[in-house]
Structure formats: structure tokens, C-alpha cells
Image 1 (cartoon, helix red, strand yellow):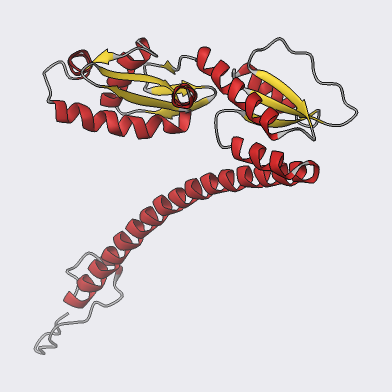
Image 2 (cartoon, rainbow, N blue to C red):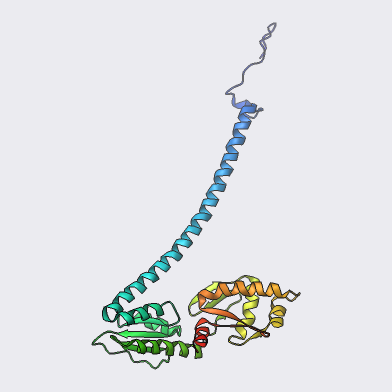
Length: 264
């Protein structure tokens, strides 16, 4: 604003809404930039914390499952030791292998679930209780107290019967491999390798056939060995394993079958 004859100099426009879009001072621009940078940092931290939280939740769920399973084994051990200490130790050890030991009739629902999944099971029948009628070769029972040799014989027999009746895993188009009610997801390459082994489940597949099906453009033997090793670790939680047959190739089978063959 200028008065005639007087040089009043520049007039402050602070607070004038009409001048809100004028150039901001350097300090204001720096402050806005800093604020925006802090916002980006906080957003990035929130995303990182969310990812960590999901990993923690998944890790906690897995640990909780393991703790629950260990607690169940401990209860079974204490129950059996009360009747016969040596038998209790054998039963407790067997629970981490291919034969599941159950209390009858207390765990009747679990028995039905294992029967649907074709998992071998040994029933510990309580005193004064009739054993359940069953025609399955994957089920046996005994009543405590029992001799150690009887327990060993039943566990070994069930393991061998399971080896004679392997259940073929199922692999869908999305890379989900399912076996006895447990599933894992495989990478595209591992899926192609597993597909060949599942199609010939229990029989050896030659190295050349595996490489041709998994890598149509060609691959090296070292690449095949690396993926076989990774796939073997991946499917171990399903009760499956991959065995190398010298000068032939690889075979996928149940771990129960491998244990039974080693025992013989």
C-alpha cells in the first residue's frame, strides 16, 4: 500500500487469506518437508511392525501346538507309569513316531479321526472296559499292566502293517501337497518335482526324468540335488521322505515305510 508522497515500504500480508498461496519462507518449507519425511518413516515402521507381528503370531501358534503336544505326551506318560513304568516309557517314546498310542475309551473321538486318516494306533484299554470292535489292520489294543515284549511286538507290528498300506499324497494345481490331513504349499519348481514323485509314489524315478519334467529347458545334476534336498525338508512334517536310490534316481515314500525297512 502506498500513500501519495510517502514511501511506506512493503506492507505485511501475514494472516491475509488472499495471500495464502504466496511463496512460503524457507523455514516453513523445511518444516513441511521434515514432517512429510517423518510421516513416511512412521508409515514404514508401522508396516515393518505389522509384518513382525504376523511372524510373531505364526511363531507363537507353532510353539503353542508343540507345547500342547508335549503336554499331552507328558499326561500319557504319567498315566502309563502309574500302571507299569517300563511300559509307560515305551508308550511315551512311540508317540513321536508313526504309531499313535491312545487311551480307550477316553480318546474315542481321536481314534475315529486317526481311523479316517489311516494312521496306525495302539489303544490302552482301561481296566473293566471292553475294547472297541475293529477290523482294521492298523489298530491293536492291550490292557495294562503288560510285558515289555508284548508292547514292543504290537508297536512293531502296527508299524509294519502301515508300511504295507501307504497312503498316496495329493498335490493340487496350486502347489498344495496334502498327506494324512496335513498340508504344505510348494514353490513352482518344487511342485513340478513333487508331481513326478507323487505319480510314482513308492517307486524310484530316474534323475533324467525328474530333470526333464521339472526343467524342460534343461538343468544340471547339482540343481536337481539342491531342490530334492529342499523338498525333502519341506515334506518331512507330512510324514513323507525322499530316498536316493544309487544309480537309479529318487523315490518318495512315507517315513513309516522307511523305518519299517530299517528295522528289518
